[in-house]
Length: 177
Image 1: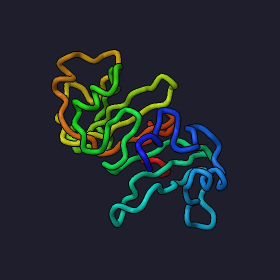
Image 2: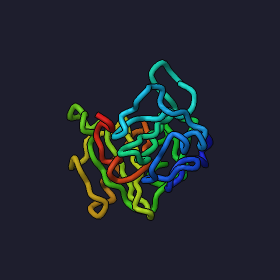
Image 3: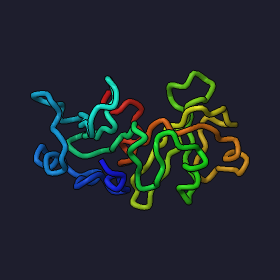
Image 4: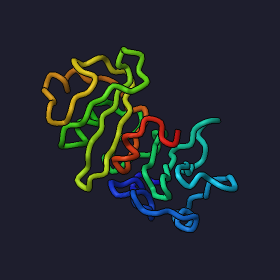
C-alpha cells in the first residue's frame, strides 16, 4: 500500500460507503477474507503483508456490505494528512486546520494515557488518531468548538493507530464486535 492510497474518500479503487463485493476487492488488489462465509454484516479485509504474528499493516472494515473504514497500524503507511504511526501530537495538530474532537479512550484506566483525536473532514468522513502517552486534560471529552489554547498545549503523546472512514464506523468502539 502506498501513502497515496489512503485518501479522504477511500483506499485504492474503493470509496467509503461504497457497496463492496468480492470482485471489487479483487480489482483493488485485495484478497477476500479467507473463510467460506464472512459475516456480510461486518468483516475485516487485511491489507499488506503481516508485520507481526497478530497485526496486518492495515485492515478494511466492511459493514453492511459497504466499506466503512481503513484502520492503519504500520508506520510505513501514511494518509492524506501526512501523519504516520509514531508521529507526535504536534504533527497531528499541524496537519489539520480545524480543531479536533478529544475523547479519552473508552478502555483507559483513568490516567488518560490513551486518547482519541477525531477530525470531521470536508466530505463528512472522519479521521481518528489513537494517541498514547497522554495525560489527563480538564475533561474526558472536548468538542471541536470548545477547544482552548491551554488544552492544546497540554496534549502529549504519539500516534498508535489511524482510522479513516464514515462517521458511523469511526465512532464504533470495537468495530465488528
